[in-house]
Image (cartoon, rainbow, N blue to C red; front, side, top):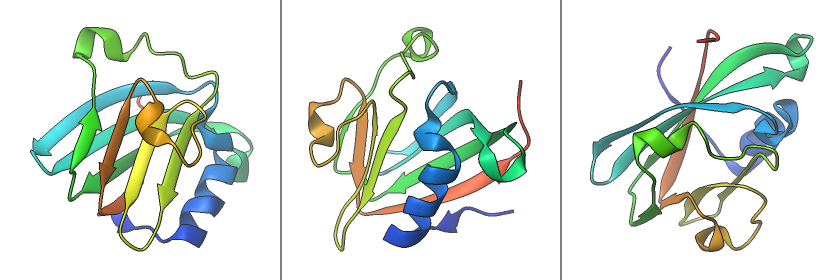
Length: 123
């Protein structure tokens, strides 16, 4: 299944369903180009009886990002989950609770569009 574009209402519904990825795990960070980055999380899905699934977010049109190296990635604290926001011109994703201020987060990606793909749990 290809990456599905998100809009503000579908993003809100997804974040609520996966409880903002609180307590989840970062599985991978994949820069496809300087302007396209994917990040994959393992999360619990309330729509599936809290079974674990993987959710891959792709941000395109990246114009600002603060990333970490692979060896630090898995040790990042996911207790606060993620912040993801969409406006008419901006798509932003950050680790932690940073509504309206994702660029203050220790890890963030800001671009123009965001898509999602739900995948089997990579345990």
